[in-house]
Image 1: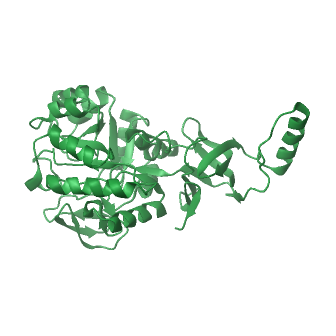
Image 2 (image 1 turned 90 degrees about the vertical axis):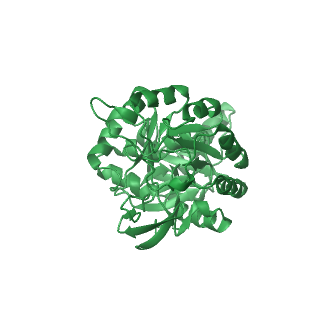
Image 3 (image 1 turned 90 degrees about the horizontal axis):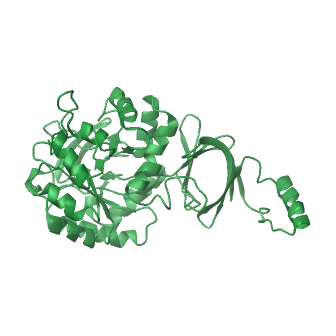
Length: 396
């Protein structure tokens, strides 16, 4: 199938007038706009006959004219807890399937859901169940272990009853139970055993500094020991100040990647713009951090075993603590653009950068020949019109 007359987002070039040929679930060709046409094909065929060459037969292909719409890579959410009334930590095929269907309908074609701080045996069961489900899923490509190696003082919506000192043996066990699906582990580097755990396990999982009171020096040590990411920048960490630069300053000096929740609740628009300016578009990863109420009406829900009240676009525990978001990644990306982030930067932060963070950028996260035909067709006002997963259109 050809998708023609689109403004195609190419990560290294921005928005370009291109036509795409999709075959067998893969992006087979990317050509300048109009090159697919029958006239161009016949001219090329005649030239090839004269030269004794070969021409790929493009006649007879289905052609979808997007009439100037924008074509993006499918989005990649590497940190969210649930949606559509289900939580990833339910650990059931029913929950995984409902989450997958919701994400696909909202333009997220690859994802790595997050656990919460739970008992070790429960985390092990979730990892094993997700690994089994992932064998038949083209979307579930990772697990984000958010807990239990976090700070009590900055636990946020995590359950303090299950917080633990960093334990390399436990972490390796979870990685094994997940069949290697566990891609990122959140950790507070100031807690007992954290630096040693990072050093021991950094070759098997990506560490993200999270839910922490750590100062600048401790964070730098963690990053020099193997941590390379920061969980939901600004949230659940000390602020950046001129004498205490903390996690944010360490991430800047160590060129770490930083997650950002641009849902309009977690981070002020000015701070979103500042993050892109400070870290550069190549180091910002947009996440939704959504919980089960995403796509659901206001009411009472649950996150990590704790009751959450959702009102409008905000989810809070009974003590007022923000408990994840109720916004999907596509809407977070559009919100970032409306906050003043260049579309090219916002799209990259929701596609190429997160795909690289979980090590799947060889198959998705950008529009390139040979990669999965995971594509979004979007109007000029950023309304999502079509979603293609491996070349097949998803019903919205």
